[in-house]
Length: 350
Image (cartoon, rainbow, N blue to C red; front, top):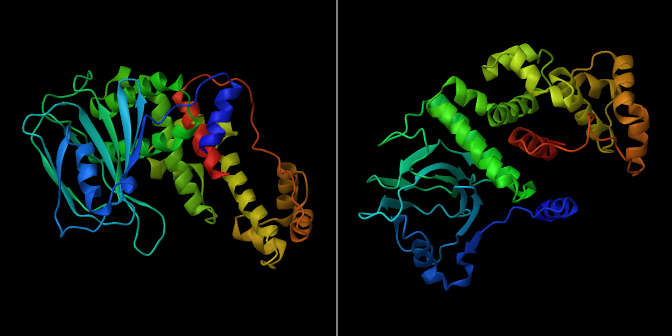
């Protein structure tokens, strides 16, 4: 992923966004690893282990500078270390921090994401956690819309901000140094719209807000593709957005209905080329909402340049076909976080 970003940046004559900090505890003797991790963060918080001393403390810490913001990824993979951290009595920094806990299920499976937490480093605080890491966004103390003691973030807005921080993190490998300032401005605008909403804040934050809505819509669509009554109306209701806004967000992909149809076609295509699945083509099509065989065949051919039967035959023979890329115009893309994040998210889905 990083190599891809560097190649794209070099082709455009731009430097890929650098990870300015990338350190881990593996180079220290096991008995000294926790002390090393604690020293990394000594200027921010005091950290204590609440269980018996571990033989080792596997941890990795990475950071990206985004204008006057910083995004930090903390990883304690599969350890379940029970930790307490508390604010320093004489704090060196007074930044706001917004953090999203991340946990890996013991039996495997997708990462679980916790609720957004926020704190000002200048205010006394104490927290405990037993997660496998976190994404932490650092913001300057004086960013325009901050309240003096706490941020008044409603639960639904906290969930929205948590989604945005994850989306931002996933987009970093494809970003360039030139993008950093745009990302910082867009992020501040989004937070302003969530914390102290006003007409101006919402207008300025439309790009990143739309990116989060699109990411949420993609998750819902992926989970409900087999539901025959999946419709833009249902998505609008579940996402709590207007029909016009949903259509506007998905316009670059050809429209929401077109996007759903393409995702279903992609699922059927992947099944058809799998020689272990010997169900009839019509049965596979019906599973993914295509009830009329002739309409499905025409749609499939228009999308991929061959019929479902031809796709199955070439797949079963082990012949790789250069599938057509997603439709839509290509060319120079303005440095808009909306476009950057959408493209990054969609690239990970196809």
